[in-house]
Amino acid sequence: MTRFNDFNMSKEVLKALEEMGFEEATPIQKETIPLGIIGRDVIGQAQTGTGKTAAFGIPMIERFDKDVKQVQGLVIAPTRELAIQVAAEINRLGKYKQIRALAIYGGQEMPRQIRALKDRPHIVVATPGRLLDHLKRRTIRLDNIKTVVLDEADEMLNMGFIDDIKQILQMVPSQRQTLLFSATMPQEIREIAATLMKNPLEVKIKAKEMTVENIEQTFIEVPERQKFDTLTNHLDLHLPKLAIVFARTKKRVDEITDGLKVRGFLAEGIHGDLSQAKRMNVLRKFKNEDIDILVATDVAARGLDISGVTHVYNFDIPQDPESYVHRIGRTGRAGRMGKAVSFVTPREIPHLKLIEKVTKSKIKRAIPPTPQDARRIMQQVAAKKLVNTVENENVNDFTETSAKLLEDHDSVHLVAAALKLLTKERKNVPVQISTVQPISIKQAMITPRRDRKKQTKSHARRRNRRK
Image (tube, rainbow, N blue to C red; front, side, top):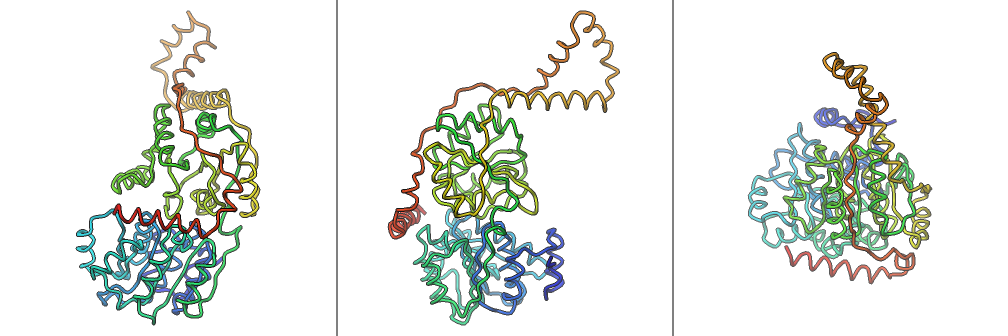
């Protein structure tokens, strides 16, 4: 076990880590922080949820001068959610060294960001498109950059940002430190490392350490039309404290969310068509446990650091194994056990086997829960409430009425009536979910990378036009 005070760190950073509850370094932190502090370029291969932000944030905080009122560090992230999260964590880590980070992303008013930049943050955490906008306006200057971080580099490649990344890096002083983090290492990412980094050292976290060690993975083979009822039965049977349900399309997110609500669940949805304010409001509710189910597209699969998620449901199995790993990585954090359940149609079983092969993990088959299973569990919960009241509460004021009831009614029927009142029965409201095509293993494996790249670039251009 490697503790943070084993590193050559300032007392200010150690104090911040202690306040955040961090004592033991994760594998990526153990390998990266010492190299980062001495200024080496690093390629880190690790998944979301392994502590990458501290792995690159701590070296920046230790190396930067708080009295230099210029941007000294640049972190490039694929999504606004990740940019916001990274900036927040760096601010917590840099609290006592007075190193400040600012998140810059599309969807937020440009004048507001320009005003915030005039306050001269030490670190800017930005999405590529919005960063280029600021560079063209000369509202961000990169002349004093000491360290550049590329976070989730493979995701930026998939989203069509690779040319933007190259353009940005050419505008940064060549005498800089570069830290690159990626879950996978496709050839295009290797080329960036070879041409734009200086003798980088590679840190690779083994798959079993970076993915699913603390996650119990199961799948339920179920026809498409039965997925929603299977989901609600499972939720009632297992009573997750906090659950994320992943769906493939924005339309299905909305439909699943509405369906859960009409059946009495506390659920909200999040996807790319929602305003930034709405998305942040939903995430705040989820973190504060005002809702216990978050329904999401893959926009929520990366970068969201929400502690306490007990269950992840793949309502739709993802297109590729990497997305599967990122999705289920929302649970099983900080040493806790988590559960991941995937709903798979019969035609998608070969694709599930591919995911098992790539992730080197066994996904166990589970039996679909029935409504009777769910009702039995809910009745058991009600029975525990009743027994707890008998054993721990003062019920003397109710005994006279109870005695009169027992004169006229059978005791078993009276207890049954009490359980019925205490049992939270679901509204049996029919819910229609639009269908999607099942994932084909041929589709997942044969689509050429260059075609996928064209598709994602086209998507990125459309998204930038909307900004």
